[in-house]
Length: 237
Image (tube, rainbow, N blue to C red; front, side, top):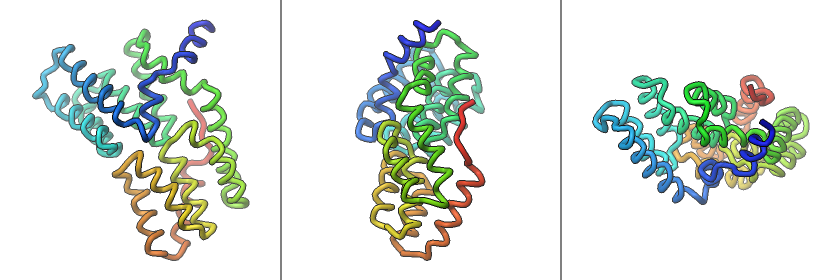
């Protein structure tokens, strides 16, 4: 078992690695869009069915970096076929890139419950055992603990690992902390990075709009409190 885990760690899914890098969405088009449709055809699914149409729409959204749009179509597809491993895999990838790691893991664990030999899903899950991810998780939790009392230190801690595990939530949080310090230009840089990964993210769009209008920072202060109350420290199942 240990040898198998080591092999998986040494052969991380290229799909996952490229998916999480904002400059590699061209690869996403090749692998997700074309391979996804190929898989649909290989499984002889009805391409005119509601589930297949919704899934194809989700793939088109992913190709446009519209993660939230893709999630909506995937939910529609899963209402038709809730045990479709392919739909669940892609939903897990959407959750991962948004920084919703618990939800991503739940999706992939369900895939393994349907097919315990699914090598792609095993590789996705092995990402959570990587040193880069463990370092990011540790720093994220430290950042949550410091964000009210020492936002400067919180920023430095999270920035030291965010590029190894790029995700929308991490960039969003760094932007909030910069804005709280009155550093609007720095906040915009990180919110734009988040938006580059998910162009339709309404929360990030709202923050950018607030920042450009120079609205009183109490709005962001409220957002930070919401993060503390709702998110808390990040733990994997």
